[in-house]
Image 1 (tube, rainbow, N blue to C red):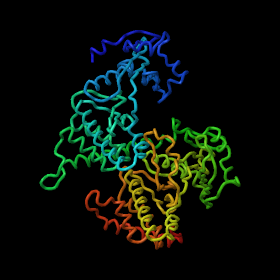
Image 2: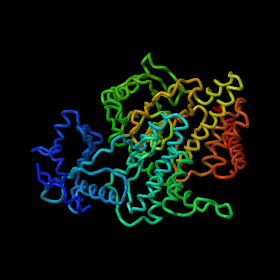
Image 3: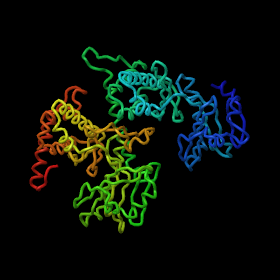
Image 4: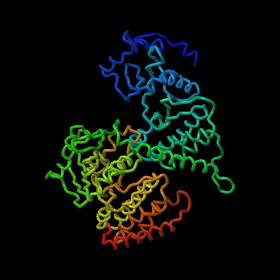
Amino acid sequence: MNAWLQSLTQLSLAGFRWSLAGDLRAKLLDEGGLRLPEWLRSGQASIVKQGPHRIVYRVELPGLNFYVKHNFVHDQAAWLRQLVRPSKARIEFERVLAATERGIPTVAPLALAEQEAGVGSGESILITQSLDHCIPLHYFLAAVLPTFTEPRAARLRQHLASELGKLVAKVHDAGILHHDLHAANLLVRLAEDDRIELFVIDLLAVKVGPPLDWQTSRENLVMINCWFALRVQRADRLRFWKAYFEARNLGAWRRDAYGHKPYAEELNEIEELSWRRNVRFWQRRDKRCLANNRYYRKVQGRITVGHAVTEIAPPDIARLAADPDAPFRDPGARMLKESPSSTVIEMDFPVNGQIRRVIYKRFRVTSIKDPLASLFRLTPALRSWIHGQGFRERGLPTARPFVILHRRRFGMMHEGYLLTERIAHADDLHDAFAGLEFLPARQRIPLVRRLIERVARTIRALHQRRLSHRDLKAANILVRRWDAPADEPSAYSQDIQNLLYMPESAVWLIDLVGVESFRDLSLPRRVQNLSRLNASFIQNSAVTRTDRLRFLFTYLNCGAFGRCDWKSWWKKIDQATQRKIERNLRRGKPLS
């Protein structure tokens, strides 16, 4: 590595110290420094990522494609850091070379530039060669792999899991600890004969040393698994672990003489730690939707305050904030619900430059106590906004909220207004079952079973994420109609490059006022949620006891972890359902 560094051309130009291969000087530099302005004007360069701390460009020249990462000293903390350590570009430059020297497939550095600052290192530039025909792993899984037909898709998915396990084992054996090793920092290339090649990128957050011990490796595996646990099947994750264990010689991948799996304890621990890490991560991000950032902006009107996603244009937000009740007076709006506590309509509204059908809900003030309560706790509209965005962070399907507004008087919140995505070709659970009643049994039974299993898996995912929905009734669960056309892109799929990309779903949970987040979701909470849904169908003869049992088996994932105690769950849910029915009878409230 030292010999290669010494072979680089060193020069000072336009306030930067450059280190680059001599044959690249004419291509990359002129008398004004890096030829980036010229490339931007000609369209040869485009911005890939942009933030206050760095900008990443992709440049395509004849015979050479590369990335330019320009790091800035954007705040006081960054200025203080650069006083005591090398520039970010130099750190990443040296770590890329160290990884390459240890046999890790990664990018090739082409040039390094550091600002000639009087104190510290200042701004810096790193240029790396593009890995042609490579795409980020998360994009490959979300957008490319689903386009392949079976059995090719299954074969590629299985091969990918094994190759990824071998790569991570190689990284750990090489003594490389990547603190930001997620799916977006792994590139995949599909070579001839469907051979998969993987590369590790973004090596700034890397520590190089001796081979990693098990404790350090486990922590790194937990970080990697956090994303995959939500989006990759258990069987494929098991293939990853098998390839990793065998590549690192961590033990025999087979049962012992007593039928036990020696490796299972470590795997279960990694899975559990991954979920705990995810829960902490989600809870930290839940309040991001209340701040100004790249995804959300605050709304301040003359009579209203609130928040909106950045896909809503400021003029459209301002018009809505000036008179949030105007849409309810529009004769073109379709009334969906009118009650003492709320009004819901369906209307058109511009989202990301396109007119979309949306749902607009007004939360009325039903008591003089409601505005006073807003001083001490979140309003129902604000809870719906926070949980709606939180569902997206957690990979849970719901109607995405676009705008939240409140009328504010004397510092207290009064009427609330929530604008959300409209789910096309969907019915609530009651209507979905009613729509299947008139089909022939041969066609109806498979559709009913698929519907039940989808709903059970969705509620299981809700509870896995330590969330409770105390009003989990049939009216608050939407499902795609059996005769709906092929899936249409929703508001979630507008940015599939995002790591938080939400895949299309056939089940959605709505009306999230009753959602709560817990560090550990207790058994009574889970039983309450399930009994609330069960009570919705207590008088519905279309849902049989066998259907309820199938739902429970799917929810408990019976068979995946050995025998499950479904009988005790059945009894607890039945008892809670009877209490709910009796309570509603005493209060004169119908079950819904």
